[in-house]
Image (tube, rainbow, N blue to C red):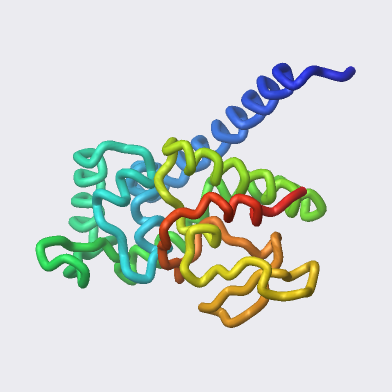
Amino acid sequence: MLIDDEALVLQIAFGLERLGAVARQKQWEQAESSGLTPTQIAILELAASRSDGVRITDAAAQIGVTQPTASDAARSLVDKGLLERRADPDDGRATRLHPTSEGGQLLDRLGSGHEAVARAVSPRDRPAFFAALVRAVATLQRGGDIPLQRMCLSCKSFEPDRHDTPDKPHHCRFLNAAIGPAGLMLDCPDHQFTEYRADRAAYMPTA
């Protein structure tokens, strides 16, 4: 049966809600097994994904909680020896959160609830799924619905259409390598923010 676009939007929304419910359930299971809350795990994961650590304000924005909630969660993680505070090299009055070796080992054991959902997408379907995901994130980012992400399209190292090769037309200066649509990243540990450029929307991957 064919359905119109509005009905399709509703079906996609339902599907996303189901996937989100599965991810949250797995997060709660992981949290309970480790004696942490999902918010604490999210902050620990975020700090571990950034070589320069993360500020409390950025952590709160990225995981979608208030700053007091993030501060309480981070304080508990520090008390448990899973996070440590280090001086912020960009601001002498601030600190950044970094995982301790114990915190990193805990994450290795836990895995990720959302990773389990991502693995449910077949390898054949992953490129098209990722392409749609990048476009959705970029659209929400432009509308101010989510914080600026560490994706290729907002990175100083991204050079669109530098190469003549159709499968890998872009260039990453940090890697000094050609990259294609499937090689674009949503969260890169080596990302350097640049001013948002609307013309870069043309380089979002297509299905």
